[in-house]
Length: 221
Picture (cartoon, rainbow, N blue to C red):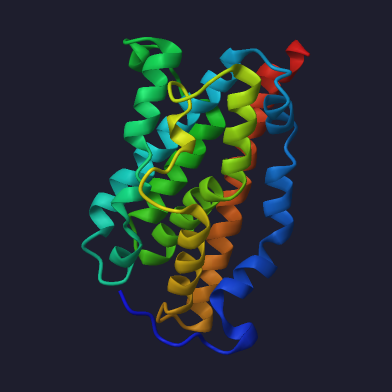
């Protein structure tokens, strides 16, 4: 796909996105549950629980992608190489056993997140791209650090760790391409504002899931 020339300076959506969501993005990355998990201070079951919550989120997102691939704007953001469900299901079989589907349950915050994700991501490209960006660009950024830390802490290689591994793309190159793609979106300032608000909402929903996990597992420290 060829991309048009970037919009000038501060009008670029990718720059507005970085500036306007930096505080909530940093809050998500500094979450106590993730810090403890990356340091290996939690039992491996806490990591298995995180993987389970991810499955519910990505099921909702990737079902929305199957619908939004037909939208003239959103379809540019549907990349098969990003799909996480196959990797997550392989991880869950390793972490929870062959009957993993009957052994996992969504936390209350995960259920709330999934409801919002389904409602907005299926409603149109603004909501879909907002949640798509928040999840996948996070996986390709801080998620790569977390994946390496978890692998070291819990002795994982391929099995149980596939969610973090993108075999069909280079994370840094893809992030650059993705941000340029955002800058080509034919949105008004008002539509950009709606997008930024939904990204912020998605970050808060993610923090709530991590807080639920923290309430369950940090008490073990």
